[in-house]
Length: 306
Image: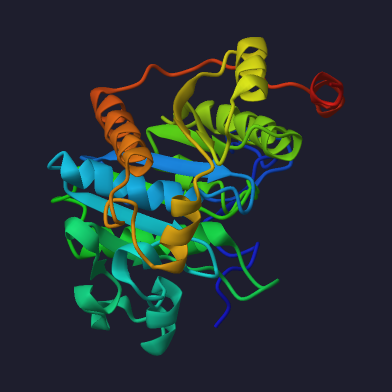
């Protein structure tokens, strides 16, 4: 059984008659109107591969939980390691468990694919299709459908999608169909900001047809933010938080711990407070941004000179 074929029902090219424009040349998994996240605040976290999205997402999930919110984190990456600092292990993915029952989802129990992590954060790893054979949008859609069938979204205040690298193709852009705000994690360097600029374009494209809006930038693994701030000023983006390049943050992944479980130091406590501040601001609601991303050559020139 293949996970997705482009000609199967539910997949549309934006160029087809009657299909809404969803980015030039886009191939999308058409969302099922009945499979929507209606009651929770939903955030989709994007950024360059290796920039620390999973660390950021997991600690943000804990921060929301420390504020008394019921949190669900959904990892959207084939390597399914988004939540392992929360659960202390690599969990089976939604695709794994669906394949184990020959895609008869009615045979699954909640505990087959949802696991409780640190401080009550609920964790799901959507996984991804086998390499070269399917679409990440199908995986995300099946995950949300399962969560709704098991009534898990009704008791959730916050959903965080931790999304694969800087891949914002039709499949892995699909969390934006569910999100209220798209958040971008970046470092203060050329490659990270270049990737952020492309992600800004992707979120703006989705905003034409879905409720998602740009929420802002989370500066990560950076002593300073001068280049990020310069880009923000030029494009209309906004920095929401700044997390420095601390060795304790690197070690937290090795220890399979969130930053809220690490031995306290003044520097680490400051980072914890920044996560709590970020969670509180996101819960209160950040204004949507109408940023204007640069063309590739323009940003190359903008960032390419000292």
